[in-house]
Length: 474
Length: 81
Ligand SMILES: Cc1ncc(C[n+]2csc(CCOP(=O)(O)OP(=O)(O)O)c2C)c(N)n1
Ligand code: SF4
Ligand code: SF4
Ligand code: SF4
Ligand SMILES: [Mg+2]
Image (cartoon, rainbow over all chains, first blue to last red; front, side, top):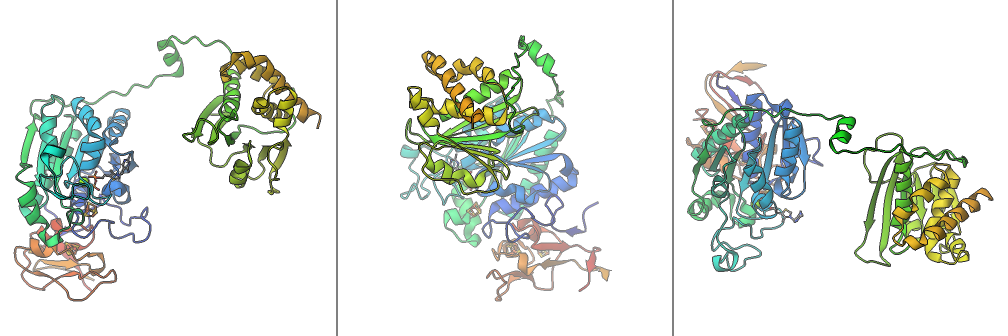
């Protein structure tokens, strides 16, 4: 039965609670086509009753905040990558309805290959492609779909097809592939064209619901801010500028010829994966630590200093040894473009439970190898955590009273052993001694993996032992 | 209280309206207008003129804002103010 009241569709959240400030209205400019298209999609989601199994993938562009609005699963992804992420979601959850919502800069420029490959695979997703012939969000730059002669901030004399090439016709391009099932271009520029767009959106979603494969609707849509036209003039502009280049209509529709199918999910046990990859894992040689001084379980560790101080290798020593001791382990580096002298951090997690995220915002343990790192990261250490710093070269003291502080004259100890570059290893030795997290032999065993110069392995074993001794004799 | 409408009507929520005027252009019966008054965001909201609505819904689908326009067709339950 036709609805007696047309009102805010249930595909939208009642209140846009994720949106800062005003939770009732969109963030879009007055008259923006995104808003109209959102409403048509939200209404279809409500009418099809698929809200609970729909996942919207939001792009980068003005519609980056799709997740503010739709009462569905939501994920916002890197520029142009929505088809790839949508692929992953759909394959892992074949019963879900996955919508990739993308602008023309996102889909046709930076994400050009992503959409091509997803379409070619006939991926069972639905793409709503909002073509407003411009980069709206960033202030009106040329897009692949910008029209001949059209002025943008990067084509102040108008798009010159000898210079920028002609506009890219995406649905026509994709229609040359065997993969896609349903491709249509519509417009949002009049009552009749909006009604057609509404229908196309529903066909595209139904295509996915029926397991028929890749569907996409390219929608010509107004960006009055980017075009610098009054909303009341925007549809005239579209008629004059867009329609001659972008003909409307169904470009490909083979729904009748395709048989619906749904992917079976396969889950593999750890054992099956090992077997498949022919991984015969030797039992780790566990060196029980007899160093038990503190009790730091499952630490998140941040190591920070200058590039060239061996920050990343110190982290790698712990991570490699952690793996050998059959701990869950993560190690990720973070450094500036400079080889030496820039900042260098790395994050290490050692745990007897699976690790959620490898990044460390508030570390249990901070090892600061220079003064800027101490100044910058002291405040981030978790209350009750451990802060270690190289007291040879850091001439200030930490001020926190709610954490344990361990100064280690690491550079001095390393110099006494003949090479200041081993201060990192001294610090690692001090750390394992202070916490008892693993035995020195565990690090010794994997040192060759962490060190670039294999000739330095023996010297570093001594540096490690010196770090251990420093703490044990304190 | 609510009542069953004998005639269709459209309601614009002035605080949800951004004054783009698209609904005014969309209405085939010319029964919407933009007000000279401002809403709290500084837009001139649209408003139903009070006569002539057929409940066709075109203004609803032309409007980019989720909650700005509600169309009550003939026979709809209308919340009395
Ligand atoms: C990797 C990356 N490159 C560039 C940008 C800058 N950027 C943000 S939005 C955008 C283009 C958006 O245009 P479009 O996809 O057409 O969306 P619209 O705003 O027009 O809806 C660009 C280039 C970015 N955020 N990330
Ligand atoms: S800049 Fe363009 S696309 Fe972005 S919100 Fe404004 S009108 Fe819409
Ligand atoms: S429902 Fe139709 S007739 Fe009524 S105000 Fe909206 S556009 Fe006009
Ligand atoms: S289309 Fe919507 S936002 Fe624009 S003037 Fe009409 S009611 Fe207001
Ligand atoms: Mg765009």
